[in-house]
Every structure is written in structure tokens, then in C-alpha cells.
Length: 78
Image 1 (cartoon, rainbow, N blue to C red):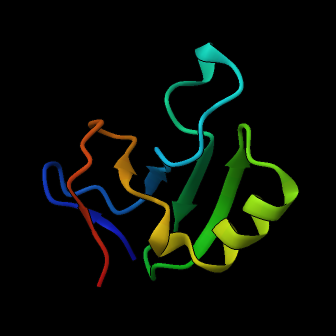
Image 2: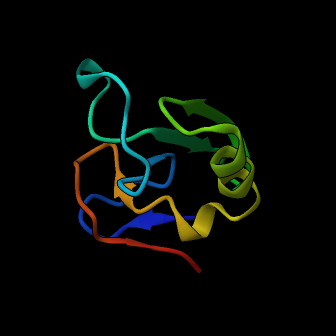
């Protein structure tokens, strides 16, 4: 499960590698949330095409690099 080294968030993260299609949606085109066991429980597609979306859901550790709690890019994966 990812963890933000700035605020300790382990729940909601985004990908700065996938641009959003609408400005009001923030800076991430892909947002995901995790449960307390580190399982991906919810995701929101904000601009990724089908091919990118498939890759994101299979390998979220390569793409979820932004804490949506504090905005930091200081995210680590175990």
C-alpha cells in the first residue's frame, strides 16, 4: 500500500503521469483509494484511455505518485 511521507496518508492517491481532461478535476487523470489492508478498493478515471487504464489498474505502484490529502509527491510503496 502506498504511503505519503509528508502527511502519512495511506488511503487516496493520484497519478501525475495521467493528465486530467477537465481543469476542475485537479491535476490527476487517475485517482485510487485503498483500504486498511492495502487493497485497491476504488478508482476514478479522469482522462485515461482504455489501454492506459488497464495498465494503471494492473500496476498502480508505477503510476500513483501523488498524495491527494496534502498534494505531496513524496509517496513510497513497500
